[in-house]
Image (cartoon, rainbow, N blue to C red):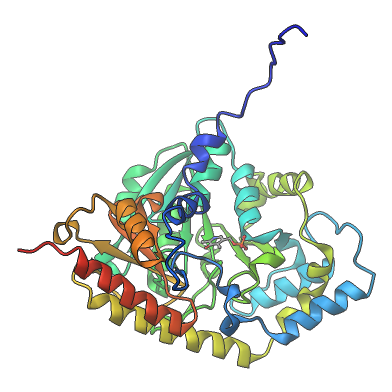
Length: 416
Ligand SMILES: *Cc1c(COP(=O)(O)O)cnc(C)c1O
């Protein structure tokens, strides 16, 4: 047969976008694991604690899904934007922490918070537009911004100020093409929880700049320190807010793929600017969340027991304390604050105290090889020579993991 010149080629945007993929970097770190080590691998890199028995979701939530599933009433497609009963229950659930009431029209059901990010970013696409993202942050924003042709500009989170947004720096980054900023509260990857005051200042800054606030509350209510969780939607009268959330983290069921977008915009600015229309169109061309999980949502939101939430928070608090105290004892690490929320914290590596370790990736690779402990190198979060530690694992494994990290650091310590 003659040789044919095939015309199709790979999408050239996928490769640069996938550079911001936690899954890809973790796979690279794990490639160093030593199979002959008989000890269990300790995954201090994961964002999905549902694999640990101590974090099994509430029976009420499981029963609600089973009931919806076996009713045979939810085997069809759900309407775009979600089943009405799911939207109604979400609106009620989210309104309980807001100064005004959301209607079912203010919320959209998505396949996880991840799809909520995709839908919102795709609805903002404008020629030459840019978006302000936190550093460190959640890499999916960066990847999806690349795909949707939004130019990314990073503002700093200030470590010495409990990872608050550097609002002065942020204002110098913004220009007339800036359309939105993202905040993640409670914070992934820093485990911080913003105060009411700070959130208000963020809203005021967004108003001054004329931009939308995208509030990622994937870890909403997962707090265990002195700062309580305050939803960004409380400041929707200052600047329009799109809140993204999901069952994934608070209910520990990321595989159920149930998330949402909620608009807190009492003055109707998002409607006026055409964003609502754009979100609806984007939802029309996206896959909807599984219908039976949507159908179970009212039951899940209304009936999940306090016992479940309290138990989860208690384990997380204990884990966070143990992790913070354990890391403090390791000389090459600096961790200024004890985490107050989410499942993670960030530590800075002092490489001058270690021999033969080049950078954060090298540290994580060698640690995986020698101790079968997996950490996330900070570079993928734009924080070179930092690492992200997931403390949300079975407490006994966490203890073991910290011991192994300590042994590794002592073995590699420079002698001076
Ligand atoms: C996990 C996570 C998401 C995605 O959540 P899903 O509901 O699993 O899609 C979004 N944002 C942040 C900050 C997350 O950590």
